[in-house]
Image (cartoon, rainbow, N blue to C red; front, side, top):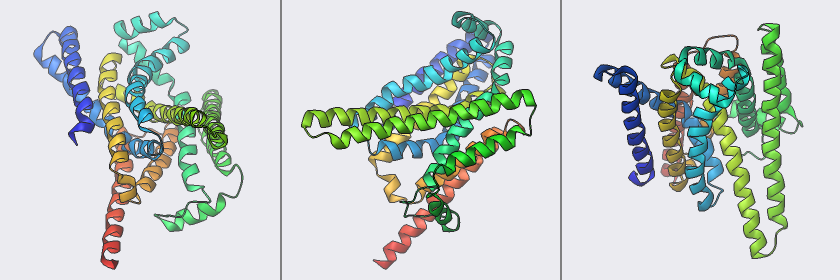
Length: 351
């Protein structure tokens, strides 16, 4: 167990040390420093609780990737997750929204966190449209699968499996959801919401298309060298898919983190800790074959993804606490885990 989380624990120690230094620099008091350390710890726990379903879905992709790409997911991937999504992405939003340069955005984050927070939260509609649409496609594509044989909640999943014969159904459902929710918000924001949602759909289709093309190359490869190149390309496609998936999951967390702090660097440290643990958890799930052992765990994760997508889309009109989001995901995965254990016991008795 320790070997999977050794890197995460070391990373946590480094982040907490940086948080202590930052807290002392900002407050100059022991109490203030301890307060910032507490915020960083809470953000880390929050990120893990909100992203456990992300870890399960990541594991479904990683189990078909070779060890080299798994390692790259833990190294390059964590750099993208922590520095890209938790630091660069918010700064890019501020730079675009406020029409300023990247250096000015960094200065703004460091010197005027209140205005920085206001600009980020003002972009919530676009972020929710993109992330919600992408995650909705991820979740619906799992259930709209004609070849899917194992069902957890058959009353829901069997009809969806049959409906998979309707071409483009998932895209149609997401577009209807975007249109319906856009009617509930201000017309000026509605266009932003729908446009962002369409880009989320296009991103999902693009990532899937790249993966399909690379898999096709892998099938037509014959020589050992060509096969190795094809596998590498296939691993690259999976890596890109995982990074976009992680980005979609992290949108809500980045926005929600401002409820605890409006300091970019404190948020990055806390969410970065959570992101690292999610990656370690993903690799452990793959290596230990947990998804195969607990048959409904994957189903619970995809139900949680559909729920998160719905919450992200609805959040442009209704204020939904992060606690509710985390509890729904945890409850669905917990129920799936319990039913998996119960099914395993029944199978053992039959033997």
